[in-house]
Image (cartoon, rainbow, N blue to C red; front, side, top):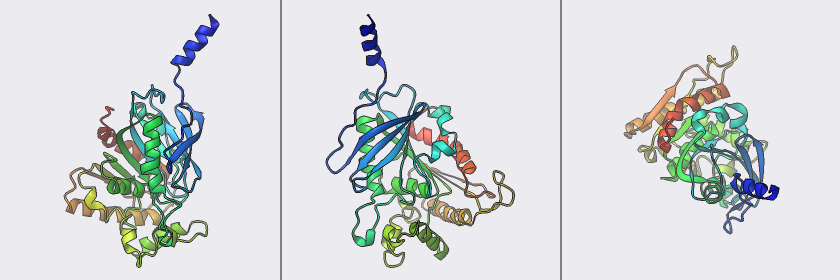
Length: 318
């Protein structure tokens, strides 16, 4: 009798599939780690990243069972910013406790300390790292094949991830049904200050800043191809949410806190919003809230504010 009960429980309990080899030249999940209720980390080996293994955190919906290939879930991709990682959203916000996301599979992928959601130019040679290929091709296929992700997707991100969200939505038409950028780097070619600041991020910890997109003059076409302002024509039919502060001390800041970075990104977001309006964008929402720095309390607030738009894009009732 005991053996029968054990067998029955094993049959009924949701369980993760065994690590399955990805397509040749693609990606494969080589390990999984349950880190909290509804939170599962996938260790993914990627050909686009030179065979390295990186982490992807999933916040799973109620009733999620990846072994049940008959059911696929609407998916929200949350992209982290520079100097963060795949744990940032769950560590710094209340995303795991948002009730309206209990019917959504939330994907929080690693994108490198300063990977910029790009296939790096590497002085014309390409190759590792190819973050865009990893996310939009390799990881997407793995999630849809083995982990219950469906074809209805939306994307949101902060700072570097805000740029990534808009860039992916523009460069991969049809992949995402809506996109949100919080304090995003959305027009790095705005002026010399903006370009120099991004090059400083590219340099990272003593790295070569020209590896990512090349020189902003000599390789201007490469830069423009990763600049949401120059991709705006591909965003006009998509629901888009833009938010940013102006870098002065805001209601969620410590007294006297300021941010030149947020001030720069605020000007970039205003420029992108103006361009989208001129192009006749049909579903643009902006929240340029004035005082506020480049900080997590604002991004958590903006995630909540943009969720109605994102969930509507997924066809999920709040």
